[in-house]
Amino acid sequence: MALFESKKPKKINRRLVNRTPATEFVDIEPGSTMLAVVLGSSSSITTVIDVASKAIVRWRIPWPEGVESDLRLFDLVEGELAFSLERDDLAQPEALSLADLPVRLGTYRDKRLRGWLEKLTTPTEGQLFGFRGPSSPYWDFRGERPSVALITPERGPQVLRRDDDGTTWVRFGWAGEDVWLFCDDPTVIRMMETTRVASLSGKDLAGALGYKPQYVIAALSNPVQGRCYKVCLGILPRN
Image (cartoon, rainbow, N blue to C red):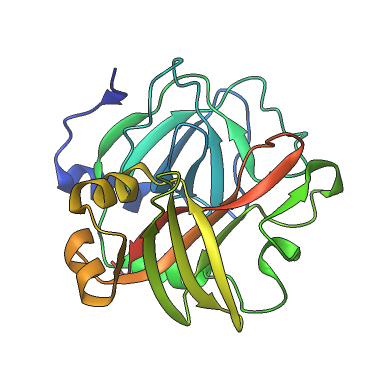
């Protein structure tokens, strides 16, 4: 099952973005439609840039059971906000629920997207998501910190596949630390399965991705046995 898809030409997509009124804050009116650009998506986490406010937002998408996300990097999508927004999750203060599957309008690779990404980059101050280690108890969150980070690595990234359990990990240097994140990006996971290598970095990683990595999009997972984990939701180019 695929999400709804529009056949609008690229010029119309660009026009939609250009004509979207700018807002200072994210519109959370139930039933309203949000135009957004996808940064990363799995069946559990979807992160987008709200075109109107240029803010990073998490979407809770009602994927049917057993269906994986088929949203791709820089997809231009429309989503209708649900009437029950569930804005009481203190671990994910920027999360909004959609009423249905989003509509894919095409891709958006306009040069202005580069400026959006640069402004959204997380400063290298303190610890990622405010705590050390790979996870934190769900009850420790107070809604004071974002659950998504757009990171410019100081070193890397490197993608690794573990032989013991088949999991994929993304490693990079940031804020003076050696960061390892469990990979929750279906595209990167399939890339490692296809290449059948244990590690990719540098030119080899760029060749496999089809672009030179510039950013890592990190997020906090939904609670797993009472803990939220730091995960990698995607590796992005500069655009």
